Length: 371
Ligand code: UDP
Image 1 (cartoon, rainbow, N blue to C red):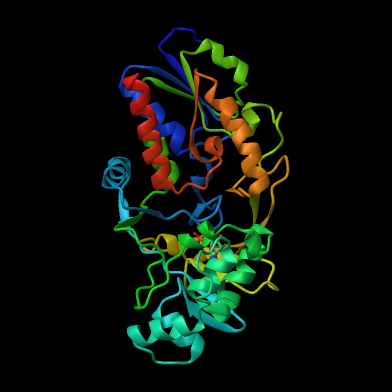
Image 2: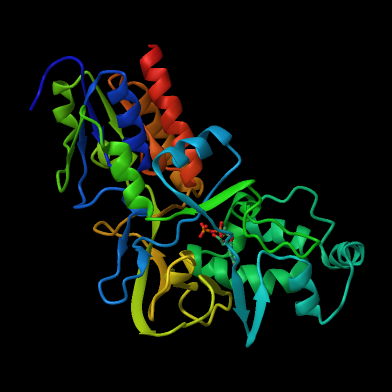
């Protein structure tokens, strides 16, 4: 192991680690990246399904969207981004609906032909306007869409996704989703959206392709090894760095049940199953994430969410009151360590979209170089 004082250790080869590594490599630092898994790109990892040839998002669907022009330009330097709009459907009690909730959903669900302004008035008549300051997911939903739409589209799905009643979850989770009074069924509001033509792993491969970067796969990094480096960027779990001494931060993990068939299974990339009685949250059909490709066979994944145990892959930080308390203890401990910067979804225990991850990684690199 190298001990020159311009060498930097980076733990994790997802977007955080790769982007920081590249920025510092270009500034002349020698970068050693340690990745515990046997592949790069973290949970954005994509690969070709052997049987069908379809590019699959191994850890669930990732659609790139952003309002950050610099991040959009950054990703386009390393990828050919294909035009892609995420259009999600929901199946509830034998009917198919348009998501996110838009004028089509409202008219389908209530069997009406409302105009935008009529729909607004109609939803206001459904909404519980007595809730002035919604704090929980449930209050937020009742306040903005009312009981019927809440129960059809949010309650069951959210209970399956989080393993908790929506009255125990923060309103911020629902604030991710828009409600629209027009027929726009684009799942995201951001001006830039697309899919990398050759998948996310290829992007990360290109970011990492620099003479000053060495990547060690299947190589966990012990925090004590950092004494060999000028600085360490840690994008692994925050609590793992401290060997869980203040307890474990809770996550949800996902199980994907894979199956294949001929032709087209569901005609869309993502269909949510919003009823609680159906055990999975959604079915993803990955060839529809790459509509510019042609495949005779198709591969689908039934997605199941459950509590993350010790050997599982963490996906969604839960961030309930108990976790926030533990988190603060870890954050204080992290602040007192000067030779490590904690980055990314796991390193900061926040649910980050890819664009925010890249933005924060660029900023972390800039800050380091300035100091
Ligand atoms: N959600 C829901 N019904 C849906 C889709 C989402 O109730 O059909 C809720 C669910 O609690 C989810 C949250 O809205 O965690 C945010 O949804 P998003 O699609 O952003 O979830 P993610 O991209 O994290 O899977």
